[in-house]
Image 1 (spheres, rainbow, N blue to C red):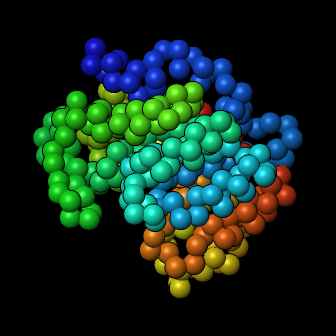
Image 2 (spheres, rainbow, N blue to C red):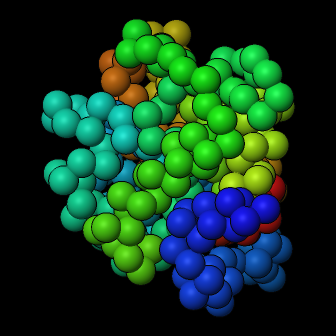
Length: 259
């Protein structure tokens, strides 16, 4: 139990940081009176970063706050998404009031539970695989938040995490809970499709699907750019945002308990 408490403090930046998160006005309450269509929770995973500035500018223009899940992934510039070249970007997002959570450091996949209190963690890019124990998993989840704190110490961090690809095992879920973190997925209608092949799922189709399917309470998933997609989803992101706002939806960052 002592280890779990220690790791939770590392992830959230201490008790003072947690208290600030609770008090922060950006944690909007679902069902505000002016949100006639309901409340949506936009989450953005790190991805390749190609459309990051475009997406961030659209969010700022419309005053929309999102929950940003951080991992240190390869980026379109040849670096990594939590490297020095991204410090100003993350600092700006923290200043705008977005919330943050862990998406693991290496963005490997949880591939099985080989033993009690152990989880297999493997790269899809052939970088290797290992079996994580409790301390190893806590460290893997803490590291992206520690990197964020180096450039934006005031950032609001939630006690949530998301497994790469949403692939989470029973052990990974339980072990992360012992670190003080709850796993956060997304809703079926909230999958915006920016990971799909753009020939089979062009932007026009994804835009129409998003505007027709999304309902109150959805947790939306997208990225700051996906390398494999030839037609950047960021090109229609603002149109989606505007359409949802016109329908009467409000946006809020995820609550600490998750959804």
